[in-house]
Length: 188
Image (cartoon, rainbow, N blue to C red; front, side):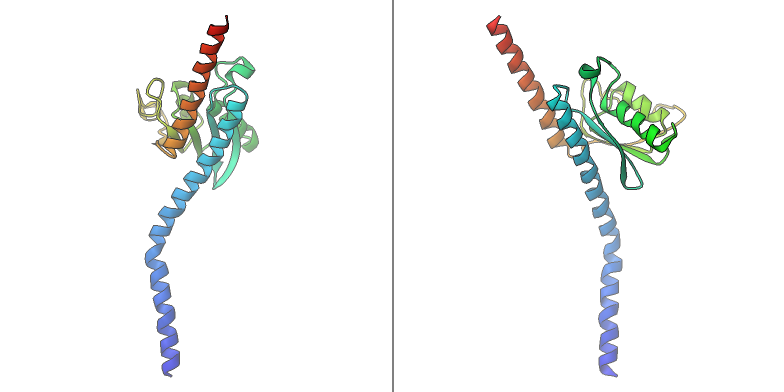
């Protein structure tokens, strides 16, 4: 009888420990998920850099799965609207066979500009998670907030996800670009 009681108490302690830690585990899981999806966006940004584009990458996520991936292709496509976010939203719409991306999240390495933030609102994106803040063109809080400006849909925004990594990638790209430009001027 004593063994049985001890056995039951042992399991009760484990259950209590798991139960009290569940809120912590949920938060930890959410953080892991944000990092996982931002890493996927960073991989897309590295593709942009290889193509000599500004290294910005984006992924659209629905129910914990990546629906679409894209990176900047403005120079490649000779299209000023070929930002990573726009391309990722278009791909997600095609894959899900709908324009309304309700329930989807957008992960992007750089704070979206007015065009991209507006596209997220019009696509009914649930949340935007971005890495680096854009002090010149950022429209998810830096210079204005298109996602919460009284339009028909409000998008939740969280900036600074893996901010240091995203900002360093952009800084490094523009530093190399300036060095190449300087060398080109010196040879001419």
